[in-house]
Length: 362
Image 1 (tube, helix red, strand yellow):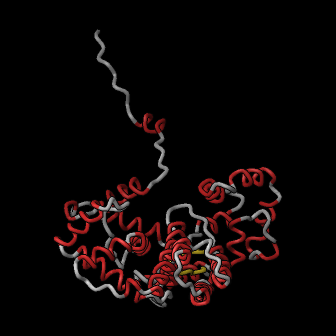
Image 2 (cartoon, rainbow, N blue to C red):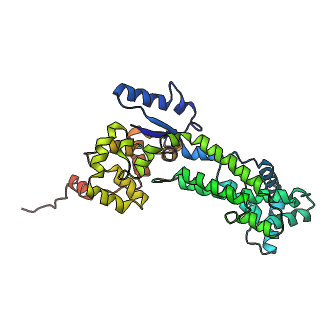
Image 3 (spheres, rainbow, N blue to C red):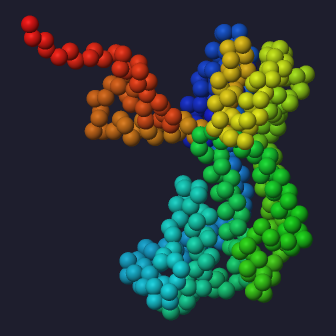
């Protein structure tokens, strides 16, 4: 059984084509080899980013971008605004630009603007720009909610990135259920920006934001339905020693029994269970007596992070100034560039070198 992820949002038909895409080619090859069909999953990171678009607060984001662009797009006003912040001894020196393609920038832009909202309002009124929306309590509360929630989305996004990450999306779905219940009861312990405004006298509508989180939870459940279907496979990956053998595919049942009865491997697994990197190395380096389990563990990945990282490294190495770089040299360069734990075999390298023999006099 092969498990792999792909991203059909950025590479389009290259990957998700039913006849000529990557998934189709892999499945066709597995069918020719007589191997069990593969499990194809969408990239977790891109799924999470698409889920976040369900938040319908475009009026808040557009107003924030308008205010920021009004300040930063004009050199004179931008310089005056920065001098104004220095003059009043503000904690920050400037507002941040928003970039749509950079998912993590939304939270940083909103948070900086929220913390500088009084200074921005004072500066705009000083320069004669009308700011009617800035005084609307409902708009301010929407801004505060967006600040708090985009921060949580960024935390999830960062956890999904990087090598050797073991993150359960179901954990975030459970958090959504908790936040929905707390907002309905006006419990803002996890929403500091909203709590700050409510403590200052701004009216807070808990049902409105609880309904928003409920819609986001439904979107998460819909987009990650494939992961629920294959939950047993992932549970076998996270803890193969306590997994019910009867729920495993027939091709893995015998090896799984041998693995669970191996006390030495079980002890090693318990030692590394708290360390993500060591756990990954343990699962990928099972003894040769577990070929099917080793193959399954080596094929598990839920995002295209490593693939995109490889392409970025390749574009950096094979630039227009190195257009004559051959494939063989490029392959060697990429192996060195992306290897995070590359350890040279000094002994073998020394054996290949002939020692210099000093000249002898007769």
